[in-house]
Length: 212
Image 1 (spheres, one colour):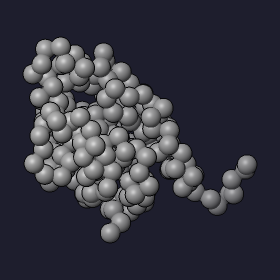
Image 2 (cartoon, helix red, strand yellow; image 1 turned 30 degrees about the horizontal axis):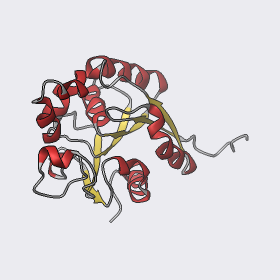
Image 3 (cartoon, one colour; image 1 turned 90 degrees about the vertical axis):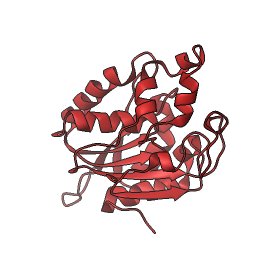
Image 4 (cartoon, helix red, strand yellow; image 1 turned 180 degrees about the vertical axis):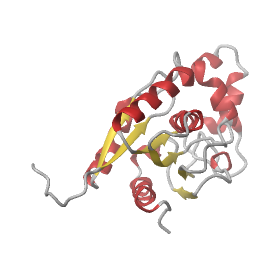
């Protein structure tokens, strides 16, 4: 259907999945963004055999080639996105919505990495998951949507004391660099299918802050 001459083009949003996942896992989230007038596209990467060393330059290339964009990233994908922005601060990115991203490092990943065989599950993303990413250029507005339903195996590994989404604790998602932070009732994977999470993501993409 032809767009009206005075209608603004849809806002480009690049979606990043987490570890052990593929681009298709972002399909539901992307569909809701499309229905709200955004133009989502997926960045797929090999989280285990490739890791951030491969994903960061590939993401930077996709961002440069498509023009100004926002980013919505889940878990490991958020760390990859922030590493790309730190490496190339001139990338045409405005805002980033992180979904359950362990900015301060994942204690569950640290525990898993102690087991020689189990550490293979983290592959080349083990380092960034344990270290996190708390620094990025201030010109990028970054917001965090954290979950607080503890459904997942991560809690058995990390033995969280406070609120968590079953994989990442709420405290692990905090950073003074964030423009805004909000907690929703969702598990780590459930953030990708949460009506509340999508509503908060849209609010941040529009205004740079979450709805209260």
